[in-house]
Length: 416
Figure 1 (cartoon, helix red, strand yellow):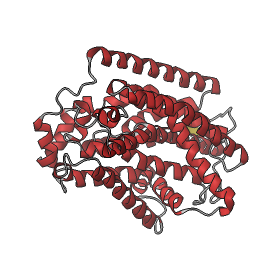
Figure 2 (cartoon, helix red, strand yellow; figure 1 turned 180 degrees about the horizontal axis):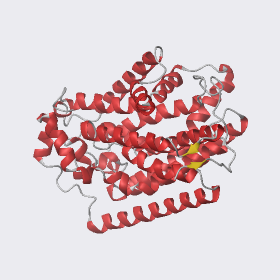
Figure 3 (cartoon, helix red, strand yellow; figure 1 turned 45 degrees about the horizontal axis):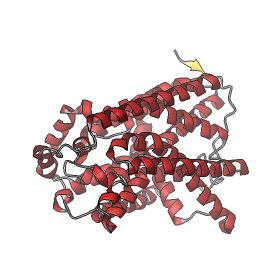
């Protein structure tokens, strides 16, 4: 049943254009665009290792993409410059930017709810179609491009959280903490099971058949492989559903508390997020990472989201500090580039995965097979190259168009 919105919680209106950190088009919160851009490029810091591993996206399930290189534990057994670079690179990214992106999706949902409230429109109303269309986009992305798509999970979570936004603050707070508690319990039990079964070992790595599929196989065979193994490849959003609900609702709370506002209260809140998120999250994440692959779940799905809160505060605080030093409301080139990626977040998310497929798999340049065993430097270089392409491409596109290609398709389809 469609409900008419009756919000009992004060909801700040979206900032006017150019009124926030980094500038931006009318009607947007510019800081959010910068944060979304950082989250998109940050998720690629993790995903790039999936594309470049021996069995590509299947490797994480068979020990061919993770291993000690994904944790700080690898430094204890064989310290070297390349091992240190890979471990730190992965440690700074794994789970953090994905959690950032999840919270920011909740923020976007809160903004749309605020807009519906202001106009007196029913809620969830049309938003359900938007979420279902996102699920369809994610399904296409999963089948044709990347097995570890996040859009499908976001769409399902959004349908639930959208209903909660029309309820009282007490209901939302209860739902948030129950979801967080269930998720924490599940991760603890899975970690204990992993340790008891000795599943931290890679079990000999991926099968040669799967390695050959991505190194030399046909594109349609790769699509068929994803469909045949869809249950295993879609387990992450199922196992982390409690975390998704928690982070969505946390994003809603942060937005309504003014964490992204261009005022003194918002700046103070960002500093608190920075101190608590990094002060608590980094030691927890470091401890889990030093524990090795047995503690991977606790690191990625428990400690990393805490660090993500610190990342949100850190990026916001850095931009606030730049302005306080006399740069006014002007944007740095880095902030402007990230803001462009953030405004085209859906397009850039899909585009970065398409570019990595074409660069790494045998259907394209085959770099993963060509540079296998040569160390981590080319992988980090690939991430930097794809990131620069996205920044340049989104900046040029937005000079002529108001929305990214996939964002425009989504708007057109929903209007019809």
